Amino acid sequence: MRFNQALIQGTLLKRYKRFLADVELDDGSIVTAHTPNTGSMLGCCEPGSRVWLSNSDNPKRKYTLSWELVEAAPGVLVGINTGLPNKLVREGIQDGTIKDLQGYDAIRQEIRYGAENSRIDLLLEGAGKPDCYVEIKNVTLAQEGIGYFPDAVSERGSKHLRELAEVAAGGKRAVICFCVQRKDVFEVRPADSIDGIYGATLRQAIDAGMQAIAWRAYVSVDEIRIDTKLPVVATEN
Image (tube, rainbow, N blue to C red; front, side, top):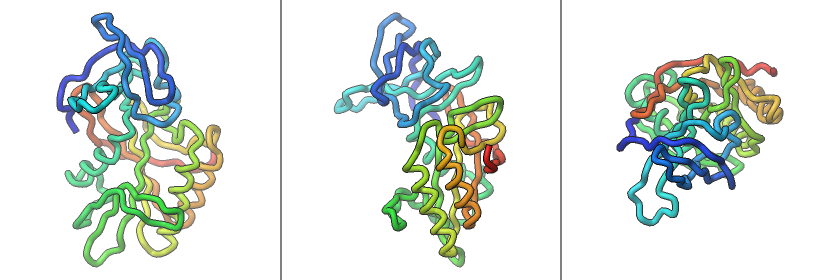
């Protein structure tokens, strides 16, 4: 996925009200940008960090600027927009990069399913094979080369795992795909110290037949694209 215009550079002043951030642009002006991330953004929202914003031409938007990238460590750009992973994974399937999810004829998005009335991110369908339900999670939290999810307690995330476990138990394919938008991650683990229920539910879902996969994205100011498969280590930590 290429950005359709050059991103605007600035310095993060503060993130607040979860969906807003004040940024000082390189010309000294201060703007308020939409923050498309519902998590805590632990390690990715430190004041003083270099950030990159996109600009929308939609006149109906209150905040036309959106926060897209942050330099969370020297030379490490992180994609914080949780609206992108579904698109990135879909592109990775369609161009053949994500080998785990090949061999299907059709991809549908945001399909309702399950006893808890969820929506699956991607539903893969193919003649002569069970449907494949793919839930996608954005990973931005990293420590010493390990990516962790979630970065805050996520009841919704646990619900999705329960739904996927039921899909697997019913004989269909269920997959959780962790999309890592930073280059300094080499494996993915559940963040048990942040949300122990999520970690336990992930392990239960895997035991029920759900697959857990992770793919890292190449992140730059020009584009973001899936490129590297990573191991998922689900044991309690």
